[in-house]
Image (cartoon, rainbow, N blue to C red; front, side, top):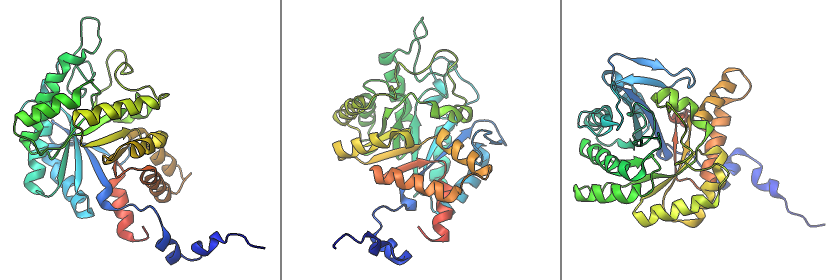
Length: 326
């Protein structure tokens, strides 16, 4: 009787390594860092064990650890001292992200800096754009502020602009603004497929960006929608996006695969704060093997089609890789 012997290719660790289809490497990783404008702060986020709000004067320590582990791409999120209705702190030349970017490029010129281009950390109302008299986000009036922010980040030395605000037309306006300012070669990594997810809760603790009223469901995507993601993808490609983020990752692996199947752009999975927090909590309670779970999650994102992964586990993953076995 003839039947397939699939186990032939699983017979030893060397054999399994030889036929492995999906791998994780350090070059896949982007590490998010929260930089706060206050001095001498190293505040661990309660809902994100191992992740900190860091003052600019302490940032060099985190960058050194990250660099020595092999991380070569970081994404900065800023927490300013002052906030206002239009998020002025996002685009001023001496803003916290701009300062962090300059410091990073001074210390590690070959470290890629991704700048999160959004207003929610900088507005006193916590939304990603300016509001009208009814408290609704005004799409078109927000776009020029996003352009100012992107240009200021590029001037500070950011290698990649990553707009996360989900305003319609944001890629086209930012692309035009960057080009007019002479930043033709700065790519846009669009958060164009960003769902209105409950998985962002711990991030809002870290970035101090919880909306004071309402929610973001009118401008972020409905988690029930799949085809809508393809419309967002098509729009951003037409507007000049160079890379596409899908956020969150673990509950949206089908969307990552759809993006991979329907475009030739590099695809980025954002392994968001809630996904990180759940894994850390389960590990701290002794319920799971953290290392194996984390690496299986990363493999699932790469297998779904992601080329890069933004993850708070980046330092942990580098440590796992340094031990061997991946």
